Length: 109
Image 1 (tube, rainbow, N blue to C red):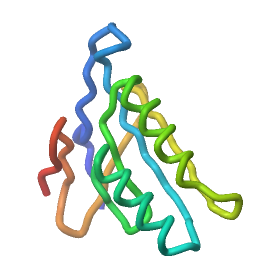
Image 2 (image 1 turned 90 degrees about the vertical axis):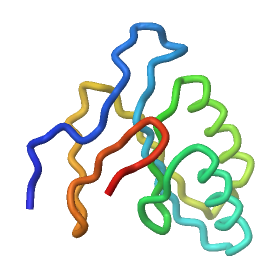
Image 3 (image 1 turned 180 degrees about the vertical axis):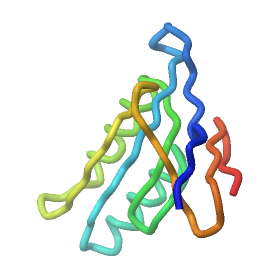
Image 4 (image 1 turned 180 degrees about the horizontal axis):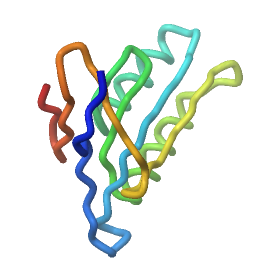
């Protein structure tokens, strides 16, 4: 199944303070307490799309704030990857429920 429609709507404003980026956060944290803290923290910035994957539409300022909050939770054995995607990225979302449309505040399935 593939979709040719543009899925994510990026702000094309040139001001870095208001430009939004799609941030994809992936983590693997073996400790239940830290893993739950990470999930709770990331929920305040975006949407959980899988058990350990979040998607967030953030400005640079919120992106930096999210990184600082996530770093405070991590331990040496934890794994965290953060992808910051701009409007130039080719992004396609697939779901058994249909096309995912990303709005600034919510996802419509």
